[in-house]
Amino acid sequence: MTQPNKTPTEKTPTELDDAQLNRFSRQILLSDIDYAGQLKLAQSHALVIGLGGLGSPAALYLAAAGLGQLTLVDFDQVDDSNLQRQIIHNEQRIGQNKAESAAHTLAQLNHFCQTHVISHQLENEALDALIQQVDIVLDCSDNFETRYALNQACLKARKPLVSGAAIRWEGQLTTYDFRHDDSPCYECLYKPGTSNDQSCSRNGVVSPLVGMVGSMQAMEAIKALIGLPTLVGKLLLIDGLTMQFRQFNLKQDPHCIQCQKK
Amino acid sequence: MILLINDKPNETNAANLAGLVAELNIEGAFALALNENFIPKNQYAETPITENDRIEIVAPMQGG
Image 1 (spheres, rainbow over the protein chains, first blue to last red):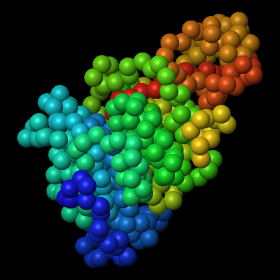
Image 2 (image 1 turned 180 degrees about the horizontal axis):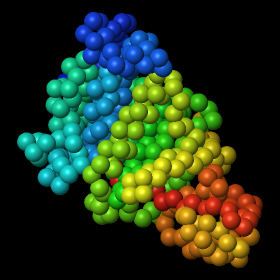
Image 3 (image 1 turned 120 degrees about the vertical axis):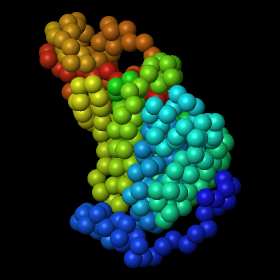
């Protein structure tokens, strides 16, 4: 683990060693991933914003799958009421910072994965600088302010953003891939303004729902990094109660203020 | 005419999405899909609706 302000200095790996070939053999077996895809993951750096319900499975799967570097951002502490769904933490970690707790868990899961912990809130400039250093961003946050800020920062830096949200029995998932000029953005879908309080603390959330959405965020991130098709241009609505998964087409809004800044 | 709004049949007198949104009096932020395609807000007035159209009204979620 490195400290928050330290810039990653590790050299980008140019090949996978025998231990990595063994560890990731089940993924390398997949023709869509293969050695080249696995090496790409080892060379990749993902930024996970929020180590709560979504960030827990997302970070666990990204680390397990062989991501080279993960930067984990959360200023909150582990609370007893989080453990119902935030499975990267445990009872011994109550009171500890969530990003630190997550990094401890990941270190035991995959020593090939280098983690960086940021345990304070990021201002815009710091967020921009951080996003410049990574290949992909996962929005696992729990508030609209962060969602809009990440959208703007990723759009500016032209980095892919995997956006997930979950409350009650329902989830929403898509990838905004700003490497492509025609990708829609979060504000093409939702204009900022008066929003209802759609948070887990107010509305409740069933435990495995965040596992479903967070795992799918990791899936989207892996595909985006390797160059496989993602949900870009489609919003997936997940209903854990009926188990209906539905996709809706989302195009760039020609009048979107954020997209016009490009 | 009858529309399917979030999977439930609904009677409406509106001729386009702007009229429908006014009729439904939706509170807070939302996005609206017509037959599985999200429509930007400034296109509501020029987007006609017809019998049996499928409307999905989706609210943003902050939960994570």
